[in-house]
Amino acid sequence: MTLGKKIQQLRKEKKLTLRQLSKESGCSLGFLSQVERDLVSPTIASLKKISDALDVNVIHFFDDSISSQRVVVRKNERNKMVNPKSKVTYELLRPQFSETELEALFMHLEPGAYSGNESHTHNGEEFVIVLKGKLEIQVNNEIFTLEEGDSAVYKSNHPHSWRNPTNEVTEVLWVNHPPTF
View 1 (cartoon, rainbow, N blue to C red):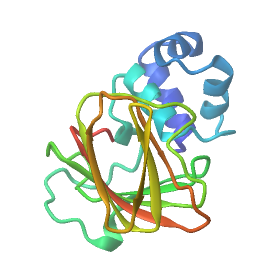
View 2 (view 1 turned 120 degrees about the vertical axis):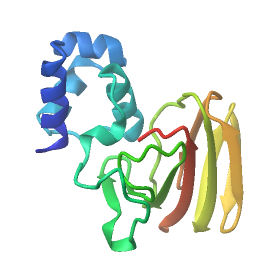
View 3 (view 1 turned 90 degrees about the vertical axis):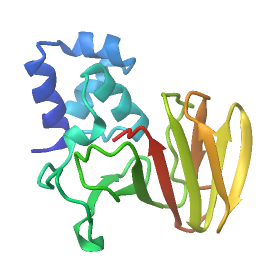
């Protein structure tokens, strides 16, 4: 089942109209309609707003074939989430649906990849280290450019965003507490 159909199915299970989901998520009615019909792909920030409004974790919308009892995640078994709009491939480094309080992601950021048009906030903390390329992060309206080997840590309740400002692929390890996916 596609991402849009999963969102639509859950919305209907919760007996919400598109208008109600729009109001709860802060996403426009037209945008949500296009997402549900798989005409557009939401940014991860938009998907987070939708999942919060539907009272589920973002990972709910992705493959659920990995058992929560697993400890090791093999490189070739990572759950991958591709977001063509934001030009990001996320690889979940913990077992899907794990009860751990840490979430580690290996992220491939295509040139121009970004976290969304607006800064976002949520509870918790974030840690990022650049493995390859450059990453620009903005926290509390201050912009930091991280190069290979550089890292940053910040409280997630501060407005923040990120982007790959280069014409090269950037690879990062991102750790969130608590999990956002």
